Length: 350
View (cartoon, helix red, strand yellow):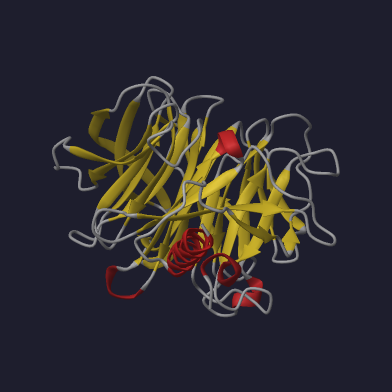
């Protein structure tokens, strides 16, 4: 009996070591969720209840310390923050739900940073340019550019053609893709070039400009991967699903991409139902890597019920030398929602 117990103890110890080191032997326990803390947060939005939703971050090419966080208030408009989290501009232009941006859009003979947002007040595409000198957004939409049902949104810049696109998702399960173009006199217009029927309610989406993929979150189902070019067919693959067989808990919300070298990097999804974020490889078949959550730190509360997310791997000021992850917080401790910022290296390692 003594030999049997000793042998069993050795086997168990070896199993735990292999599991810890990534060997083949595994325990039946659920994988540990990495816990990180935010080191900065924006000022709360101006309205109460469910107001904040999505954000993007423009990296100032002249001085990253003067970069901008652009967040949606889906009751009133767009808020622009500096890197200290202070609101420096607010555009009360409608019920903005999702926001995204791309650099180097050709407009009026110049290359500008273009910001687009889904405006649910009138089912339209809101379009702005960033004035790099004043760090203010300027409306450049040629007119009211109507969509069928404004809800989620993202942008895509084709490495194949160089063209820019706005991609909208809807509660009806449909994706619409619009080509953005210079309409003259410093304005931008759009035309619909593609429609995809995905399934049930959608919101989050993100496009991989370099690899040419579009990822769409079907809230109660999972993440779908499509070709992003407007002339592509509707064939798709499922990256991950909701439920016991997947790593997501409904709703599947925001999606974002961390660009790495040589086509590598990570796809990240907001798993709203369990207040975590699922991380996948950007390359090949988007293998699942891990999940993390944002917990309370010394001065900043934790994050729950996240809708939109955004990440950049660019150096952004002293606090974020290797990039930053931004998450909407559904319940800030100050009473109104806001956005939390986490150093990218604390999520993915040095």
